[in-house]
Image 1 (cartoon, helix red, strand yellow):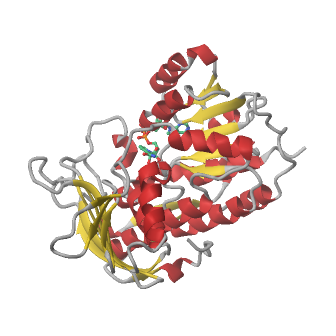
Image 2 (image 1 turned 90 degrees about the vertical axis):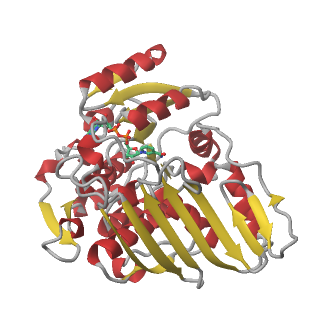
Length: 405
Ligand SMILES: NC(=O)c1ccc[n+]([C@@H]2O[C@H](COP(=O)([O-])OP(=O)(O)OC[C@H]3O[C@@H](n4cnc5c(N)ncnc54)[C@H](O)[C@@H]3O)[C@@H](O)[C@H]2O)c1
């Protein structure tokens, strides 16, 4: 009998190293992409078997966590506060993290695994959370589809254009819930302000200016330093972090970018940690299919004492501008007073996961489906590629046919 595909050691897939990027003598321009040839994997996924048993409103959803580092353990603790969730299995390759997660979830008595493929065959598992480094998301998601689980995959769904396409193709045909950890989609304040903009109150949107400015770099000795600073694992900070912000821009603009250009690099924290090839500062310009222009910057050296740091989204339209983080409308005119559209970001750390479980139980809406995850990732990837390759990069180059925003 053939083994289910997710049990097969993926090391047998041919590993293909290729380069995207421009000049060979510029390490920042190179990202080595690890692809596994997944024709059979995708085919198997698309031919997924019958649905799991239907979930009644009262039955517990058996949930497994793959990767219980910073994010995975945080999300797991949040999920444990939701009704009807049983943490049945946890997996990590680092024993200390596995122990810490098993301890945190001890009231649920989860089984521990060090091999994520074994977790996928844990008896009666309904739901899988994938919280491992970014380069593992596609392989694990496709295998979890093959195992026919509801999936919550951390962002970014993928870090190369090709693999965005593979995942999107499989997810579109998947008959269970696939949600991406782009939780800004579940910020009620964003929903209110963006709906207000989409209702036409700002007139036509013409430009968006957004940023994510931090006062310091990520900790080079931190527990995620073994993958975060290496672009072949994280996709670079632009893909790893800014996928959130770029997705919000796509959301409010109501379209995807057609082209991108930008500049950036490893400007201040050079070679810290050693061998690092991720950026610490960059600026990007995008043009959208509906004509909207967007400018976005991310830096890790905006002094804390200097004004205008942090994150914001200025959405400019014919009638004024909206800032999404504060939920405020600024009408044109010297005497015009700001108008509050929403209260500003409220902390509800489990809103996105709660909506994911509601989607499983009640059939929708999906808080961030494959379209949201894949279009966000591709927006970030094209920006990164534009900076690395020092050229104008177009959406069409990726040949990924994502449904309209
Ligand atoms: N949605 C958000 O706001 C948010 C915030 C932070 C991180 N993230 C995402 O979550 C993911 C994890 O980030 P993190 O900060 O928790 O990193 P982390 O390094 O703290 O945790 C990753 C964990 O995955 C484990 N792991 C790695 N390979 C594994 C494998 N093959 N099998 C099982 N476990 C494996 C590691 O041992 C580690 O414990 C990343 O994709 C990151 O982008 C999302």
